[in-house]
Amino acid sequence: MSNSKDFYFPSQEIVDNATVKSYDDFYKKSIEDREGFWAQEAKQLEWYKPWDKLVDESNHPFYKWFVGAKTNIVHNAIDRHLKTANRNKLALIWEGEPGDLKTYSYHALNREVSEFANILKAMGVHKGDIVTIYMPQIPEQIFAMLACAKIGAAHSVVYGGFSHEALAERINDAKSRVVITADGGFRRGKATQLKSIVNKAMELSPTMEVCITVKRTGEEVYMENDRDYWYHDLKALPIASHKCETEQMDAEDMLFLLYTSGSTGKPKGLVHTHGGYSVYTSATHRMVFDIKPEDRWWCAADPGWITGHSYMVYGPLINGSTIFMYEGAPNHPYPDRWWRMIDKYGITVLYTSPTAIRGLMRYGESWVKRHDISSLRLLGSVGEPINPEAWRWYHDTIGNGKCPIMDTWWQTETGGFVITPLPITPLKPGSATKPFFGHEIGVVNEKGEDVAANDVGALVIKKPWPGMARTIMNDDDRYNETYWKKFEDKKYYHAGDSAKKDEDGYYWIIGRSDDVIKVSGYRLGTAEVESAMVSHPAVAESAAIALPHELKGSGIHVYAILREGREPSKELEKELLNHVAQAMGPIAKPEEVIFADSLPKTRSGKIMRRVLKARALGEDEGDLSTLDD
Ligand code: WTA
Image (tube, rainbow, N blue to C red; front, top):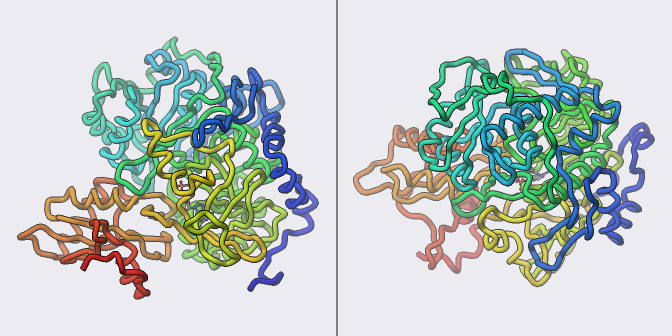
């Protein structure tokens, strides 16, 4: 099917500058001696105490890495750099949407994080506690995450676009006592509200005692005595010393909890740890983007998602990179905002999502051409399959035909990149190419057997890796059930994506095979959307499906069976769409409501979403033998 004409080959300059010059040799060695490979990567970091055992596989699927080691991710992300020339290097360049600018060296970052850490301690946060963070994209969001980690508390960052109900659900599952927020942030020239949403969430959260609020927009917010504190007030007190010891943690201690959508209603709190995650995020970031000391790295994700955790904050800081962060909308005040900032700050690597690329592509290249973005040397993509048209525009217009695109496939659960090119990899638009080092990947049938080249199957990861999530908070069974049960005898990790591998060994991700929907790269569950729908008094039953959407990748379409006495109407449709957006957050707003009298179900009563989808797309409905008529 494919031949060398399909490939985009890296330039000689890229090859000459590459640290890893031969993927095949390196990959082969990493598979033959997996433990040796990870040990070698781990040795790039500093440990308070080295590990006794690299990996403990005795209790499948609950793997442990760097057993017996003492570390703290903050030691490698900050403390270690203070002893080197990185001390005075910029750690963070931040631009607010209104155009305000802040920069922090590693030295300054350490002071900010230490002050925040001391404030948290004074507020009674202890090692092992889980602090919820609900913030706009401002530097304090990063300081807050690092401050928690520094004192051994875990953070649970909740995306600032989520509703108060979604926030409360996450606070309650984590039993957080303390939440960190801001009055709001700036988006498309307007002040968004966060603190007022937190106030509503706190009413639903019995464990909540303290809320620390950073002043960003200056909008009026309600503050309650003995519960609500302004961050700048606390910072002015003697408790906020800029000296704070970094807590020594076990490698397997929890670093953070991050909620993500699964196929049943309740979001899953995935647990990541200090040791394995430090090694995995830094190794993948360094090798895949061939990080150089002079890089200015921009991961244009929100820290509220895994991409922000791994590749905006932790991986790059461990590698001593200068990170760039931007608060607001890509098209504000004009569609050249991103290109203007790349020019202004000399960004060298841009890592973003296909949705963002498609969104900017629609404005045309004249906005790009106004700026000199030749500082870029590499591009990255994540979150959903990238369509070849967007790939080519990204490559030709943004990368000026000279920047390879690292299309990285991974998940909240994997902690970091799993299938990805390196700068030297010949690329095929739309393929995430090959496995990262140390990984054996499979595309398998129901029995777990590898399928033939170009056949579609389930994507599995065959061996454990240091960055893997350790469990689902409070629910070991669900962790086992969701990811490991399906291919139990082979001990494969079941990713939930369908994929194929071509005759060149390149992987093509097709999409989710379960009830997860990716809207603009954001992960949502059909069950969450459906439960939001039926919480409206007019709706008796609902089914949500994903259909292709030009900009968002997929859009949500919901079917609704109304309760007795309710009639379908345009007004009711609008009301339901807003109701879902209200309950879950604006990103979950469906494209349309389709009023129906019945839904296709199996005899056991499960809604057959695949049938709805096939009908909507005018495709073959497939095997209908289990359909109840
Ligand atoms: C999808 C995001 C195609 C996939 C890091 C996966 C991708 C889900 C890619 C995880 C990619 C992520 N190509 N699909 N390069 N990257 N996905 O947990 O369906 O938000 O299972 O993590 O995103 O979403 P999550």
